[in-house]
Image 1 (tube, rainbow, N blue to C red):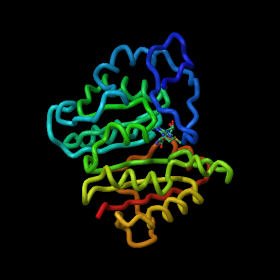
Image 2: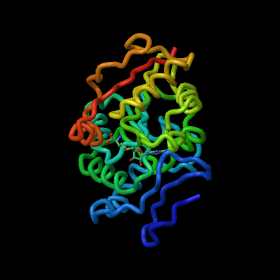
Image 3: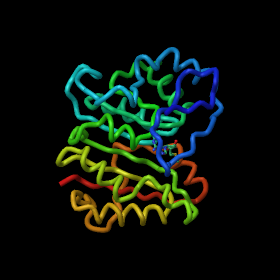
Length: 238
Ligand SMILES: C[S@@+](CC[C@H](N)C(=O)[O-])C[C@H]1O[C@@H](n2cnc3c(N)ncnc32)[C@H](O)[C@@H]1O
């Protein structure tokens, strides 16, 4: 299934039909630069949900530790990480076209080689494209908190989702989340502590300090302006 919101724009967010989604696809206003980035760089950076299982060796032309991030937003922090860790390969997944456009535009101009993106529902990508045990690190930063209780079922972090991530991580691989919403942090902690495949690097029931590899993100800065705290959670797959 594809989003049909913009008739004159041939690049579509890819997803399969499901009843509860962690996002709303906004018919986002795209700048001319973001729009042009798809013509200039989607061929270099874009991957398709319908392209079958990801083969990192074919895509990146090498064997390297693989990092996957869901919901990179406007992509600046993911790009900074890919540039700071050239020995690793990065896969970003985002449903919001303007963010994808911005990221591939900046990555293309900087000639970044160790990054690819899916413009698709991350759960569909995990199920259909990512083989079990493929990932060295998984990242989820400031996911939509869905503040209202009646919307909590739309939060992406749920026991089933965490089990799916664990199956995609190598033994010893890292699972890293951060949020600026205390109630969501408590929910994340509860769900992650309950998952037998995970060990908390900060000690049982503890939040972690921000690891040096995570730059500040756009949503984090927004949260700080609003007076929110920040909670990082860093687990290792047993
Ligand atoms: C609150 S923003 C945070 C963006 C960024 N990580 C940051 O910290 O600035 C959450 C992002 O996750 C994306 N998102 C939510 N659910 C998703 C899903 N199932 N697949 C891919 N992206 C998703 C949204 O489109 C949104 O851009």
